[in-house]
Image (cartoon, rainbow, N blue to C red; front, side, top):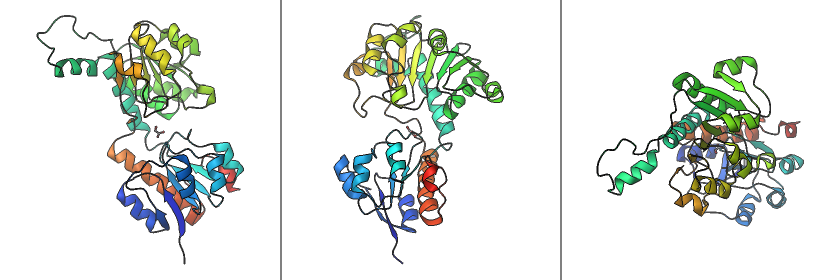
Length: 326
Ligand code: GLV
């Protein structure tokens, strides 16, 4: 029996390729070549399934070239690289990798908060540059974490994980804003209080962004929102590039309108706004919030299980547009 043909668009753990090869004829990209959109579309032509990451845009143009495509399994919880409406219209199933990365990503969000508040990278660069001559009472004084007010914008699973760490581990006063309010038992577990967006911006000592990117959340934090924040506040973005207006943020950091920022995601990444590279009061990391080996393996396995579950058994694990299954 001929095997169904699938594409794995980016390099991934070799055992995942081996697993997929048990079921499919796999074209992979273990050399991790960058494929511009037209090349990706050409590769998808003749395939029934695709294993993608957040970097591959799947939209109507791509789908038009690949009429046989039935499923795109994203190895990411975020799926703003998918035009979900276009996929649904063409009957293409979309899947993502929720849950398996929640705790590692929350760990990282908290690590970035701590690094930003306590000026870890700025002080390390100072030391490495040989500038440290002697201890002084005010050298690299940062902001307090324990007992401060943690604001969370976007209270999904990862936001709740960060809230639990702040409330239970560091005695923080947790406030949040979200499209919808959490059920009372979840609010109690997170020791989190629901507030309006303006109160969140005004009250947070540390504001962590964990909301998905969509046209509605584009520049959710721009100059007007930054102006409402306390001058001593820190901003942490582990959501998506585009949620923050990076040019406005760089200006606010330069002018000390807020104290500091910790950023794992950027508008137009892997490009980074040049002004963010020159201000000292920002911690920058290259989109690694879920990057632990066990978590990345769990994400890759879940994406593979979605392909196998759907194409072999007719049952995907984590469908985003289950209406195409009807
Ligand atoms: C990473 O950013 C993800 O969405 O999984």
